[in-house]
Structures are given as structure tokens and as C-alpha cells.
Image 1 (cartoon, rainbow, N blue to C red):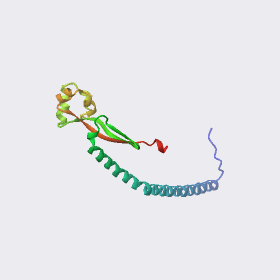
Image 2 (tube, one colour; image 1 turned 60 degrees about the horizontal axis):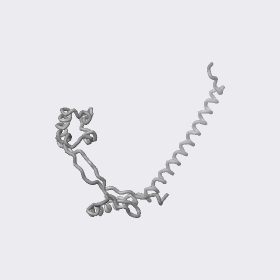
Image 3 (cartoon, helix red, strand yellow; image 1 turned 30 degrees about the vertical axis):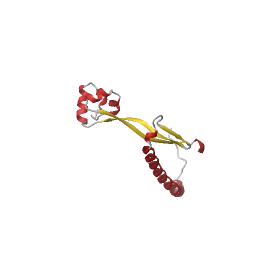
Image 4 (cartoon, rainbow, N blue to C red; image 1 turned 120 degrees about the vertical axis):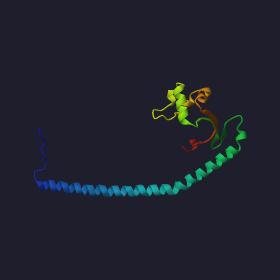
Length: 158
């Protein structure tokens, strides 16, 4: 069964188009006002926070510099707990490669196909799972070191 329109004339259709036009204008004005408010809020947020982000970045650099300068104090524990947070060092591991094409070929020869992505890029994450002797067999080696970190205790703010 076909649906029947509630309009009975072209004049009613024209009036409906007029109402849609009025609604659309009202919607666009409200949307423009909303966008202006959003822009004002974003601007006020930036005014308040951009200097704080910059200050935090500078403080983070200074904390890292100081902490690294005092790395010798981290013999028993790799983390120093303080009143407002903690700083320290975490053990990190990274696969170092020189000739990726040669390593890919060596991985193929040694059955380490899971270390090779279909695009034939070396998968260092997969290679990292192998023992050092296997990694060295394909021409790479593991480099270990310390990586700086910091955490802030935000529980008090909540």
C-alpha cells in the first residue's frame, strides 16, 4: 500500500519548504554560536595551559638531567620515591642492526621467518625474543641500557 502525503497542494509543499528553510537558518545560527563558544573555551584553555605545558616540559628536562647526573645513587633500587612522585631508571632492550637486507637473508637461512614481515622489513620485536647467540648469528646484536622515567602521584588531587 502506497503512503499518502498529508499535503494536498503545491502551496502546502512550498510552505513546508519555507519552514525547513527557517529551521535550517536557526540551526546554522545555533551551530555558529556553539562554534564561537567552543573557540572561546579552547582559547581560554590555551591561555591557561600552554604556559603550564611549557613549564612542565622544562621541569621534566631539568629533573631528567639531575637524575641522570646522579645515576650512581641508584645502586640498590632503580626508583627513588619522593613526596610528590618518583624518578628512576628502567631496564630497556633494543635490537641494533646495521645491514637490514643481510639480516633478513640470514634470518631466512636460520629459519627465523617470524622476524621477517611480508614487506621484508626486519621485525625487531620478533628478533628480540631470540637468544643473543641467535641474534648474533644473523649479524645483529642486543644493546641494553637504562631509560629514564618519572611518575606523578595524582591521588591527592582526586
